[in-house]
Image (cartoon, rainbow, N blue to C red; front, side, top):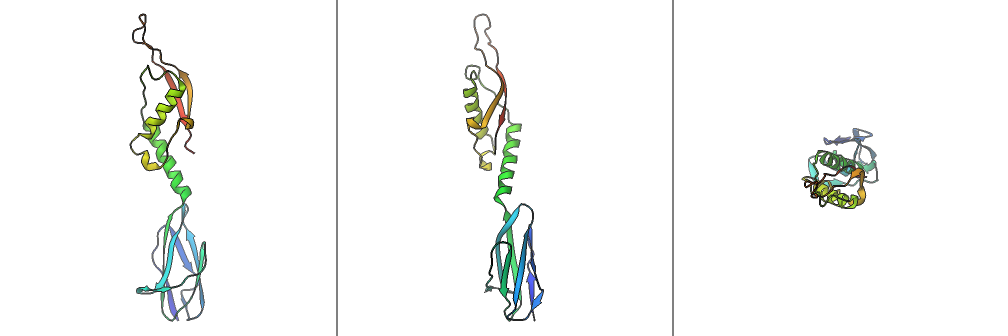
Length: 171
């Protein structure tokens, strides 16, 4: 009989149905990614000779191969799922926005539409935001409790600051 070995993996497991087999028998591999991960690549080869490839058949989380007349090692890599990557991007973007500080000139900050567009521009310019792959548009922003800024007059030369709060839809 010949051994079936599994190379060390991270973020998932590959489990053979047998640890040794005779040549010509079918060996089944069960692939179990960790939560938030999926199989990236899997290969089987003659133990100690990665250039001598053993053909794997199957898709998804199962593979089979016919045991050759030599020991076989199986190696696999796992990667984050797109859903995991997207969730991480949203979390990072949320943190960046929540830690950001946003202010506007009185003359510019007098309508919700202007504020929304300027907020989108400022959010997208935050350090680290481009690395998330998320771009915020004015349509993603909801302005709450808006009070327009009032420019200075002879009776109130400093004008009156406006105020608002906002939420951003990152989904």
